[in-house]
Image (cartoon, rainbow, N blue to C red; front, side, top):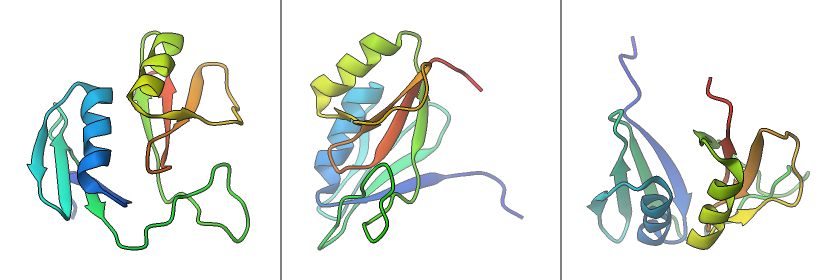
Length: 122
């Protein structure tokens, strides 16, 4: 029986560059840093791990048949959506061209992984 989630891993071209983006976005510190791996620990004890993958292909969003699709995404709770979106852009994210909800915004991290900033806490 699984006891808890210990980490979520993201493939990318450069583990440290992507980890540095999430360090800025989340205000956390990088706890692991090698050429192949980088990680940060959340206050909840979950590791966000970034893995350098040779020949990494960015996912496309929204999904397109025959293209690399996302395998997962993270939703982040924010209090002020507009401010959080602008801050994420400053750190290197891009706002997705297509949006579906008024209370959340789909963003793309520097490696192309979608993530959502949301004012709805579930």
